Structure formats: structure tokens, C-alpha cells
Amino acid sequence: MKESKAFDPDTLWAQQGYYPPRKGNEIKILIDGQVAYQEIAAAFRQAKKFIYLTISYGAQDFLLVPGSGETLFDILRSRSKDKVDIRMVVWQPAPNTADTIPDQKIPGVNDGPGSIQARWDKAKGYIGWYSSPHGHFEPVFLYFPAKLGCHHQKTYIMDDGEDGSVAFVGGINPVQAYWDTPDHDSLDARRVDMEKYPDRLNGLEATPPLHDIFYQIKGPAVGDVLANFVQRYNGARFRHADVTSNVVPPVTSEQIKKVDNGTEVQVLRTIAPGTYRHRFFVFVRQLLLWLLGSLVPEAYRETRHGDRGIRELYLNVLQRAAEAGEGSLVYIENQYFFDHGVISEIFEAAEKGAKIIALLTSKPDEGLLQGKVESLIEKIIANYRDMLQLVARHDNVALLTLGNCRPDPRSSGKFIFSETYIHSKNIAVFYPDGAVMTGGSANIAFTSMWFHSEMNIAFMESDLIKSWVAQLWREHLRISIDEAMALIEKPDDALTFFRAQADHNHSALTQGQIPEGRVFHWQKTDFPARHLAGINLGQVKIGERCS
Image (cartoon, rainbow, N blue to C red; front, side, top):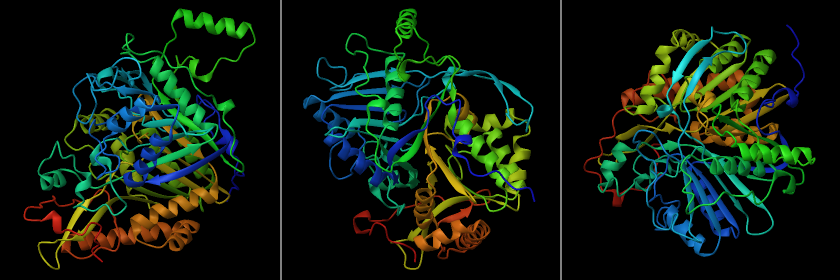
């Protein structure tokens, strides 16, 4: 057997990415909406100088902490009265799109001095070649109009109330349906938007439980998340120049103090080519700065050629898994599985002996424009389905999804089964001599990897990655942290365990029996509709389990 190269982080970072890896950071994983938005709400209240938000999907009436009565905009308006500089850049979709905040009058926003300053930004489309850097398929020429583009990043950046800054990068949209707890209880009405669904049972029938992740960051990498905001805000299409002003970065990566014994982090993006072109006077300003020997801030660099740092890192870490072969474990959570280039690399890794465990949404965006677009991509790329089936049938691959089960309060001994919508976008790769993890807003989809605006973070601290994946497996498999850690150490055993649970749970679902955990087969599981008529939610014990 050919001996693989030693683990070398420098070969895995995105070399063409917009921002470099930065040492000295503290990162925390925030699993599911309850924990994530508790932390974000607390950070909003601690900030004394600035709060900057990047929003794709969102709702004005979103409750970060259900039961508090304070919406997202209630908190922001309150903080703006405390003279905190609050700004947001918001995606303005071309066609009307559900769960977005259109460019319109919002109380306290663009309302004169001291108010929240907001700009809206339309996304780019894509015209050009779609190719595999390792030659796994022939290049395809594609045209996607701007109406199909999306500014998909979800970030929050603020000062920490003292001398530092903090950023949150992830995938959870500020929409009530995205808020959830690790119990993923089908009858938890805190997930329901009461304005949209005055009847909470109707809301629960229409809103499956949802799993997602945010990362909290302190240290120099925060400066890159901030630089991205500055670039997007200052370059936004709808600037409202009469009531908003360009933002000057309050701090840069170089000015942010490193955390002792911190983690090296790279902030990764997808940005469509030509999204933020410089005006002539900005170019002249940069030229003068360069001639004077000054360093042009990252936020002002040209992105004429775009940024595909997320895709580059995905391909790097998967190619390394193929080189390492046996003993490597690739763990994926993602809403989509439509990027042919990434799937080809997954197949190559499996062929060389790496074990692949992928948790995927059973029916992503079913009935919505987004889902139809991604299905269209499958048809355009003629050999996508063939490659997908090769991956799905591979002995070293398990393609799975998540479901949940809770006692039915209407009938003793009966259960309510439901899908758990997987909205997280993460990949962790364990090699025999190291590990890497990346997560954020980017789906395994052509759109996310090529021209949607996306943001991920990546890091390579093995013990931390192992600990966090073990936390995820504890939630999904209903096992202990110690059991999860032991499985991570033995990729063959992990693959076998996931498959066995999916087999058992498939039988349990069809027979109305108690499942072992929450893992089901991706392609052959059809979860029943949530028919909840007759349930008195006031008498329901939230978080009650089948077992």
C-alpha cells in the first residue's frame, strides 16, 4: 500500500481564498437555534460600540429567545437608542421569496440620525464554465440569471462590551421555523411564527423540526468576518445614500488581540465574479496608498475574479482523504448534495478506502423555487445521477437523514414520527494523523460553491473537532459522548453503527415502533405527514422521548 503524505495543514487551507488562515482564535460550536440565539441575543446586549448583521432569509418578528416577547428588531432598536452603531446588509431577492425581509419601510430603520442603517443587495448570477479541477467530468457551460442568485451569508459581528470583538458565522436564519432545541420535538410550538400561523397546530404541521449550527469566534479571524461585511455593505446595490453612510472598519484583523493557545482559523467565502467592482476614484485611492507604501485593507481588495475559497478547501480535504485512504473518516451534514465536483471527490475518497457518513435533508426545499432550481441542476449535468448512484451504492458510503419520534398524546403506545430538516452545512474529515472541519452557510450545491455569497470557517484542531463531532453524534444517535468518541477512532465501526441504526429505524418507522436514535436512510425513507388534529398543546410535555 502506498504510504500517504504526512498531515500538513498548509496544503489544505484555501490558498486562493480571500483571507489567510489566522492564529490565536477562540471558537465555540453552538448546536441548534436555542443555544445559538441565546448567545447572539446576549452579545447584542453586551455591545457598546457596534453591531453589524448580514441577513439572507429573515423575519422582522423573529424571537431570538421565545417567551421573551422581544423580536430581533425590538432588540436592535433598543440598542440603537443606546447609541450603538447598528448596520445591516440584507439580501434583496429578484422574485418575491418567502421568509425574506424586502427593501421597505421598517420602524427604526433608515429613520434619520441614530437609527439602524440598512442596505439591500441583489445577488449576481453566473455565466461560464463549471468544471472539475481533477478532471472527474467534462466542463459544462452554464448560464444562471441573477434572479436565481442569493446573498446567502448569515453573520453577526459586534464589540464585546470591553476591548474585544466577537463574530457569529453559521447557517441558522433569523426566522422562527429555524429556531429549535436539540430535542427537535414535533410539538414544540416555539418554532411556530404565530403571525403566519395563528393556529399553532397548523404551524407545527407545516414546520418540521430543524437542525443547524453557528460558530462563535473571538480573535483575529473576527476581522475577516468584519471585512466581508464592510465590503458587502459599502458595495450594496440599494444603498439608501440619503440616510446611510459607508462604514469604516472599527477594527482590523491585525489590531485584534490573539487568544493565548488559540486555534488557527480561516474565514472562507464564495463570492461571484464581479460582485463588488471598484469605482475609479477608489482605484486611484488604492494606487496612491500603494505608492505611499501603505497596506490596502482587505475590505477594499478587488473581487473581479470572485472567491471560491470554500470549494477549494472542500476539494483539498477530500483529496487528502483519498490519499490517506483506509483509516480516514469523512462526516458530512448538509441540506443539499448537488455539487458534482464535490461528489466526485467523495467517490474518489471512498474508492481509496475512506469511510463516508453523510447526513442529508430528505427533501430539501420541497415545493419551493430553491428546490426546483437544484433539481434543474441535476438534469443539466447529465452524469450527475450516475455519479450519485455510484456514491450511494458504495460499500464505504452511508447516505442518511435525520428523523425524530415522540409519544402521541392522543393515544397511549402510539408515536409521532417526523423528519428533522437538516439545514447545517458542515464537513469534518479525520485522517490517521490529523483532522479538519469547516462549516457555515455553504451547501454542497453548485450555486453555493460557485456564485452564491457564502461564508464558512475552517480549522484543524483535532481534539476540538473530535469533541464537537461527538456532541453531534450524541444528539443524532442518542449515545454517550464516550461511545461517540470511540466510534470516531474506528471509521469502520462508525460506518457500521450508523447503517445498523438506519436499518433498525426504517423498520421501526414502518411498524410504528420505537426507534433506536434519529438516523434513517436518505433515499428510501418517506416520513409520514404530521397530522396533529386533536392535540392539546397546553398539556404536552416538550422534549418527551419515545424511549
